[in-house]
Amino acid sequence: DTVECNGTGPLKLNGKPLDEPYVFQGNTPCSVDEGGQFKVKVPKDKLWVMGDHRQASADSRYHQTDRNQGFVPVDNVIGRAFVIAWPPNRWSTLSVPDTFHQSGINAAASATAPAALGLVGAFPFVLWRRRRLSAERTDG
Image 1 (tube, rainbow, N blue to C red):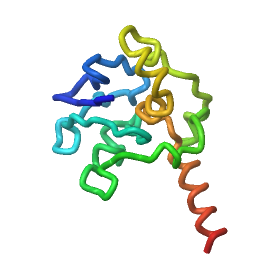
Image 2: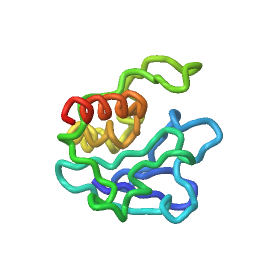
Image 3: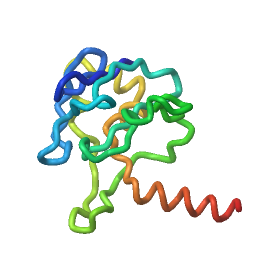
């Protein structure tokens, strides 16, 4: 799969613009800063993740110069996000967004469902961080 952002968006998956109603109100799907403009080919068994609060997310876009070039190994993903936990006034459950039922991306989404889930960035950071810190304490 190829993911790209030009200008303020929309975000494109394999050349198809995505309708992303879950992007935080007031944010644009793509940002015009250096990290926010990209076109990447996602390697097999990797994910490209983007937060819903695009102008305040330290997601894959801003880790392209890191060791993994912003990609997350599929094996590092524990499961699909199902709840918004932060901030507390936004607590709610998450369904699979209609983004993955859009014409032209169904085949890509069904063939790479884990990548698609990572792409939407519906991965509650607070829960992930707690789990990670808990594992480090247990291992340490």
